[in-house]
Length: 187
Image (cartoon, rainbow, N blue to C red):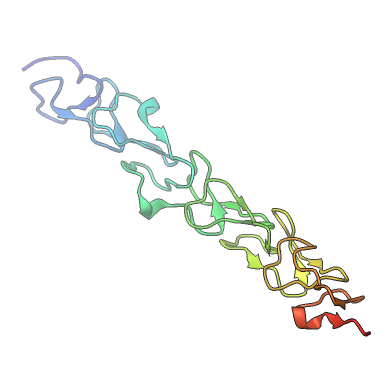
């Protein structure tokens, strides 16, 4: 029987006759002399066979989390939880989605609410549609803005001047919700 240690990238349990008895398994690494594979630490993974050191374990990619040691593959079962976002190397989804943003399942970084929407609560995976009578201009709205006089704002209005009262009508009031709220001119 040969003497000496098992080669890095391999492990040799009892009775080994070669320094390359077993190739190191995915999700693990095997330094020189390993008797059983060492799992990649939580927050890291290794899809490759024959990893030689912990440096071969890659950081869990953004949008995913690796909550246990020995993760071999990143797949849909470990997508970041809705309402949170996961940066490289995340062990557990703890980064809360901020107000003015949405974080659907698998989010790597918070996504700003689009014009016409807002979000005034944290840890949400969607943005709320701007209510009628109000506008949500720009990105990342945490609230909505009064619809100005002379205009009406339908549900989801994106610009303060998106829906002007048409010729022959007017309004001195704010927060109009529909075209029928514009007052006809007399004479």
